[in-house]
Length: 277
Image 1 (cartoon, rainbow, N blue to C red):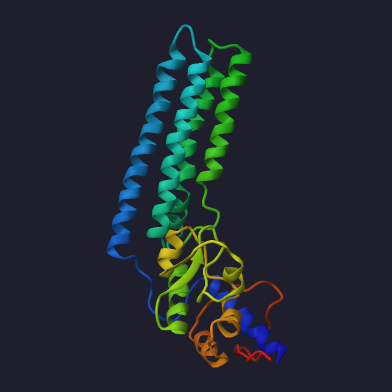
Image 2 (image 1 turned 45 degrees about the vertical axis):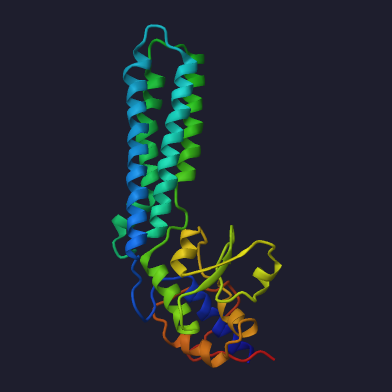
């Protein structure tokens, strides 16, 4: 019985971890695509301004006879602000309209474009600061050091360490629909995962307002994934039977490592749910 419960937990965690599932492939709504396009256009404008300011700093500020270090520092900070603003908007757009993992190049570029732009907006400027013949070592150290620190901070903030994908949204949406009959999940602001019902320990312990919406809306709210505990929560807290969870698990294809380590074993290659004692 323990093995069966562990097998179900493993399979449920694999589903929560994404990849693919039987059922329809997820697609953004027209409204989501429109919002994503708007965010990307604004991000592109902010990035263009950042690169424009970089060019201004290289070709005008650094060409002056009397170079003002404070002006270089100010320009670097402003460039960082525009670059970061663009990256945050771009990441928001990716949550609304994610790329598919099947197109590896596009998936990488779309999700890490903020890092690429940060390199473009800072690296030439940093190089030109250290190559400038009109500044002494101390001035180069101050201006270059500030530029490196800000570039690193913006780059780290721009990177998407756990990028969303069409495959992830598809598997999560199909799991929720097959289990509950509708695309509705529950989360709290700043949460690490969304859930299939309200009455689960993680949500009961929270003092924050519970939010309801689709899987896509949960991701838009910056909730990264379906909880890896959804199988046990469904049975122990949400009123679903082991048979209902088994039915969902049986519909999932090509899904790996979606539960925490040690929560599962395979039983004859087929996961089965066991009612809790």
